Length: 107
Image (cartoon, rainbow, N blue to C red; front, side):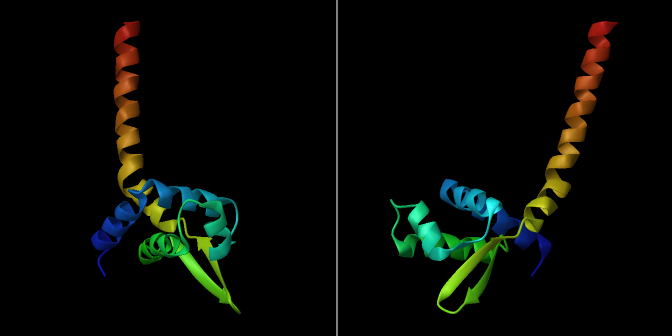
């Protein structure tokens, strides 16, 4: 699978606010699917599982099974790759512009 396709999957996964909220919960600690269902009471288990599937396909969630439990762990590497590829470069450019603006104002 190409890295461009992987980026597309990550962007798709991050596009939905519920999936971002799930990742925020997993940032603190791994959770079982049941724990995530309890955290999102307004969604049924099937909907939670569908969101987890999208996150797993984007490699943002790693699943480990322990008996009957399914533990979900955050994998932040795809987000870091996007940051390194897209955000950091634009942030550097923005800081350069702000620095130039500051210099222009001070002169």
